[in-house]
Image 1 (cartoon, rainbow, N blue to C red):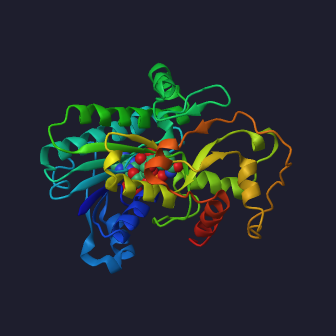
Image 2: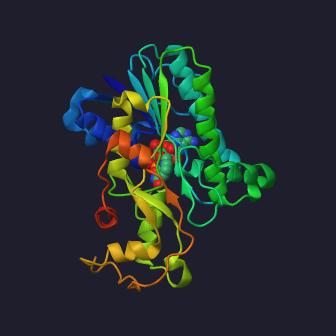
Length: 333
Ligand code: NDP
């Protein structure tokens, strides 16, 4: 079977291509420029014709994926801007929402052989200001960030702009799915912060993908004070995220479902503790040693009950994931 992977050159996208190729699929990746496709073609050289790329310059153009979906049996849609740098909301929301609309419209019109679409959504689509101890499930939706952006426009916090882009994109996907004429169904994968080694092309240590950049910077310049024990989100390894996408294509019962894919919740001190034995050693600085009795604050939890039942993934631990991230970035220069 052939799978179309949008955003094939992204951090998560490349890992998805790799695991699909390892599982015997053929992959057609979409990228925005030939140089990005050539990098992948080289990376997957030994797969020969089983990996190909097509260029979709602008995913917001009507019919952008009309050609790309022809002849594929499934689609994995990962392409979407990921940044926490201040941006006009349109710069994120348009490609996220219109990009999703355009992939799914092309699938519905020209993807006669497509049985399933798996979309890389995010915990951004359900995280809201809730009480400490709150347990999120797939039933939760993030109305808060959408409202923030509606009310504050380009004054909204960058985190809410990103979260709104993902929430609105996933909503759009389910709306299109409801109105579909074709025989495909939809699965959305909802990961929190994704860590783990890089396969993608990176220009340098200051142009990493956003989630790896956050971890890398926090290890090189350790956090101090109150923030160390403050809940900062949940996390999952990129290899497990890629595996979840592959399983989402394979498990019939995944059809029509949102699926939270998470290895656990996180404070910065947890990251430093996980990296302390064995210690990372120079060039990495010593991270603050934890006080075992210190209380974690503001903890919230993302339920993986459904994911565990359906996929049974043995999630990688934080030590392994964080360590592999650091060494993989370090190796790139
Ligand atoms: P990357 O930035 O590494 O990859 C993003 C991909 O989307 C790249 O292929 C990029 O192409 C493409 N893209 C970005 N903006 C546009 C645009 N305007 N038009 C067309 N393509 C675009 O990020 P990740 O791999 O981390 O993210 C992939 C997906 O996973 C996203 O949907 C993201 O929301 C989701 N996700 C990520 C998490 C994380 O912690 N990393 C957590 C939860 C969800 P190009 O290289 O040409 O810019």
